[in-house]
Image (tube, rainbow, N blue to C red):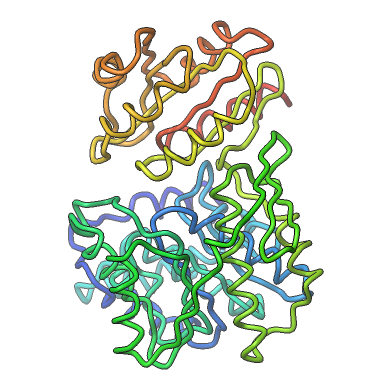
Length: 426
């Protein structure tokens, strides 16, 4: 089997017979010898910042000399992006080989009326790959929520980590912050250790209650002690407790994500699970990278892509735009229908000289013309282009060499734009 056949198999997995919960992935992993039970896992949930925090933790561990597996979602372009050991994505050959190994297992499960989803299957692949790669730690980002997320099939982990919990995915997770926090708190393990960002009161109450119920120890990251944040196109400088740090990731929110990652490593150090030095921490924060998070993908004109797709993410994007200087700024926006579109447009349109709406590659996407009509409520200069690549080309014509373009709103769109611009510059 080659990578194209493997990708096609995964993408064609039907979900019509699937059941919400962990039963399917438990069955699948059981047939694979339960590799997840043999891993030291750092499990990360939250609304925004999960991927960035995961990458920072991974980078610190690598600086300390550990072998680290990392599982994130969704990918920007290729399935391989979701699974990596150290700084190397799983190879095409390895991914194809693992999928080929899983197919007979999947067929037997289907015969028994058990139908793992795509996400459950790729999660199982990651566990098997990490185990056979003999990683020292596996860093897992939840896909959606926490309690019923496929990554939460694990019985134990060395640390549960929570980034900022906000309103998102209300159709699945609940309408209130407390309801959403309840779903995410499901990753807390009995007698476990928990690191969390400083949360809003409703979310913190839920986390504290779950920790008490599970006899787990809660440590709050010093996100309220981040100081002297300076943002530039080279990244973000900041201080925590008089220690200076730099990350190539742009935005004040990345300084807060770094505070969570640093606290996670400190807690593991204090409890004898790690031996990472302060220099490892500084180097790891410095070297951490995360594609698609206010990432510069073109120099002239300057083009950035960002995965902001909910109100909190949009606010963080606006804060970055405020400090990037006075130039002509063009937005390319694509959004999914189940998002709080009006709230996001009302907050972000003011930061741009012109708006171009487009369409993410997803059946839940809002058509470009419909999104443009909504954007016109908040901006006078709005254009639209269904194809996101043509939308970026149109934005380049409008921006000129000294302008700036920011494409955002959905990872399903910015991945395609990133691929196009990489090919254009090759």
